[in-house]
Image (cartoon, rainbow, N blue to C red):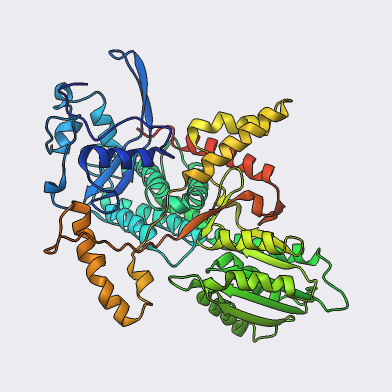
Length: 542
């Protein structure tokens, strides 16, 4: 609409892998601001649709709230706009700006604004920035966003603990006990934000844990009202039961190993290659070592160190610490080899020249499993899987160990397409084409989770760090703004630090969850079930 104030907005184009990618592109086009550098995403709001009678069309809005991290002088509007201004959020939310703005601006803002009349509703919401419930909410979000040590399973548990912390603060945040219905609504808003605004790369695990917790609390409600003591106990049960899931995955892994019939003239030897630090993999290996009835007599574990934080060493330490707790009375003889990531090819090629015909397991965890079974895991996982299936396809098995919590829901706009695959038509070519299209979409949809470059160059020789630091922190900034140094040079040095990548499903042989070995059809069905549960759980928000 012309001569109306609007937020940065635009259409989702075919080249945009998801709504966030579209928002990042529009911000760059309309303001020249760069996401994750000049602006940082704070909140993702619940999408909504409405009919625009004037335009004679319907719109689906995906609201996002961003924090400006640089001086506003960096904002350079494009040809689409004649002016820009800052406005008091309250004036937008109370309708004062309706005549001067595009339709539904207040509705969009309300879903991503943490303030009066914002996402937690009302002029005096129970969860506010200046009270204990609000601080618990924000601290949980920040902890989930910045935790680069723990995997998706632990972060998902921490999200449920965050819900418990928020609920604990409700009474001291409101002296009016009759607001129990608002407690319930506020807890669901916090839950929605933990799922959608905390850690996109691990959102499936967080979503599964949080949705389970919300629906268990829902079963305790009386006339839509929430009892705080009962809620605390219910969430505590959810937290405790999550610890048991890892043990079930470990037991399922042992059953799978026992089914392999390792015994031969060469002994009952098992080789495992893995990387990074997965609490699920650590538990599985420890469980195998502590079993008195395992078919394995010799266990050889090769761990890629996983730069930049060398989580592989952390995994080895975790396994050895567990052996100490078991007084080292493990049945299998254990050998651990820790190798640099650059040795991936050498490690796998050794399998080709080995005289042993023993199977080698490429054991990977998962931070997310897409509906069509691609797996997001630590960078380096894809190289390991591809090399194994290229150099030693008959001798290696690529196995994913993961709780079913890691199964991601499909894009909501494509849910009906995925449901068609559950009940395929007789047109096999059509089914194959649909799988190929959706599979390609999933592979393209993962946004890289970038982290501080300092983690990478912390291991560099001092002289290299000294020589490059000027380019990294000074000249790089000038190159982005088009400025030149005194000699007319524009040089920039970029250091990438991306944590996760997708392992294509064609390189994966086996999935093992707490329910045992699961197939791709099981993963797809579970994904669709979770998508429908999410819609039902949050249908009454806003």
